[in-house]
Length: 208
Image (cartoon, rainbow, N blue to C red; front, top):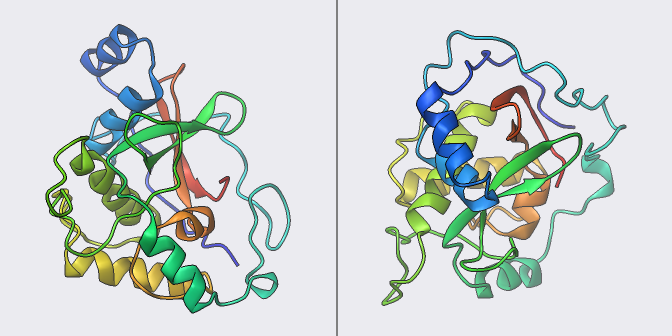
């Protein structure tokens, strides 16, 4: 069953932020980067995000995930996630009615089939292309907002981030390996952003 806690309302981004969004023609990557950098600061005041998709009913509705219909995953699933390339940017994945989800993604691609894991600091090994800092920050901010974790949003996938990801995986009946990958992404709740209106959803959803 999905988590459906009550979340604080977020204010509209500042005029300066909206100008930046307009200047980059609402590119999916640029909007996601704004999310990772905290463009939606000051969460304790502002107008509600009217028109956001309704939170799914228990076990029904778009994006609802019935834990009873999903197995706990296998070692093969974990190995598959670990074998993917690192997420080295973030992009806004469209959902419905103008809403989208800022999620970690593959560099120079529309694909979100990638992973983040312990030791990404933010680059992995000798790789120096892309912007994994943005990918990790996007994940950390979402974990803080939708799951109530208190992670430092630093762009580093350390032991604390890994621990929270493991807790989220356990909550959704997945193999708790601490690796963020496609199965974890699809099971998770996400905060939505409406790029045309420049507003964030007040709730979290599972539309992916």
